[in-house]
Image 1 (cartoon, rainbow, N blue to C red):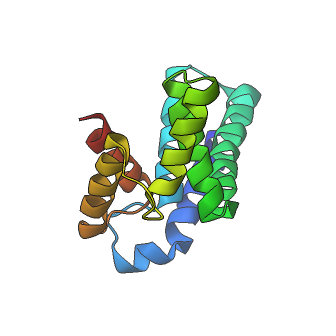
Image 2 (image 1 turned 30 degrees about the horizontal axis):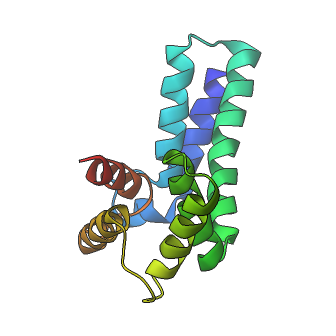
Length: 146
């Protein structure tokens, strides 16, 4: 089992186009593999149980990214605003008003919320640093929680 994981990780590393550009910088897939491996080791998984966990771990991350990529900008905005409204536990008219303001914010029809301003600022910083993939996600998480 370990040989299979090692072989897959090695193949991904050698076949990666990013490898040709920067040997020291792991690809997103390599980062996912490293993360899933660490989780499996932490849970002390072995054999078939580890293989099943690794498969689920690696495919779950890919499915999530694919789902997010297939959303239109408006759908993504709706998803984000909905999550914010749920986090604030808004109901009824209060939720409708919040959703309306949130969805209008990026279209120039309304004011940005504090969270949206923070997101915009963090996004600009991440773009300036040319961060991508897991490094961007990590930066955004830290930036938004600061």
